[in-house]
Image 1 (cartoon, rainbow, N blue to C red):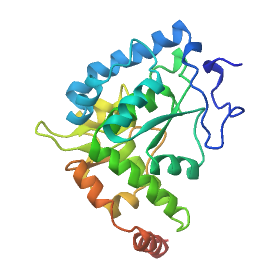
Image 2: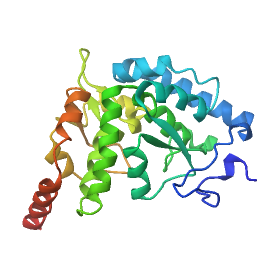
Image 3: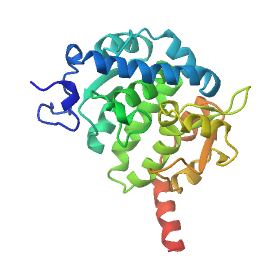
Image 4: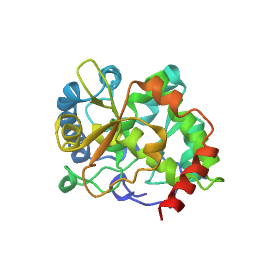
Length: 263
C-alpha cells in the first residue's frame, strides 16, 4: 500500500464519499518535521493577524508535535459542534463536498506538500486544510454557517448558481476578514495558512477592504494566481450566518440578469 506522500491525487482507494484512510502511522519523520515547521511559522503570525475565535480554538487544540490524527480531533469536534473530519486524497466533486458539509463532515486532504513548496502550494494539502479550516469549526456560529453553506451548495447545483456560490466561499471561508477591537483580522483559511498573504491582507495598504455585501461578493471575480486586490470584511460570524441565510434562488436570477445586461 502506498505511503501518504504518494497519495497526492491518488483516488484508487476512495469510498463512495471519496473518503480514504489517513494512515497516520505511515507519515515519515521528515513529513512530521515539515508540518511542524509550517505550524510554528503560522502560529507565530496568528496572534497579531487572525481573529480571536481562531486563536482561542487553536490554543485549545492538542494535536501533538506533527501531522494531527484526524480521528482524535474528530472526537473533540463532535463534542463541541457536531462536526468531524473526513480524510480525502485531494479535491472532491462539488456534490460530494457540499454533501459532506451539509452533514457536518469537513474533508481534509491526507497528503503534505513537499519541502520546496513550503511557501506556496497550488492545491490544498493537509496543512492548509487542517490548520486553516479545522480550528474555526469549534466555533458554534461559524460551524453552523459552514453546514448551511453545504446545504446551499446542494441546492445551487440545480439553480445554475455554483459560480456565484464559489465566489462567496472564496471571499469568506478562504479569504475573509472580520472586524475586531484591534482592527481587521483574518478568518479565511487561505489567509491563515499563508506565510505571506496573511500579513498582506491585514496590514498592507495595497488591497481594498470592503464591507461585506452578499450581492457584491457573489458578483466579484477572484484571483487564484496572486494575492487578492480586494477583501471583504464582516462584522462578526453572526452577520455571516444571517446575511447568507436567505433563499439564494432570486439572487442567482438577479446576478445572471445583471451579467447579461453588462455583456
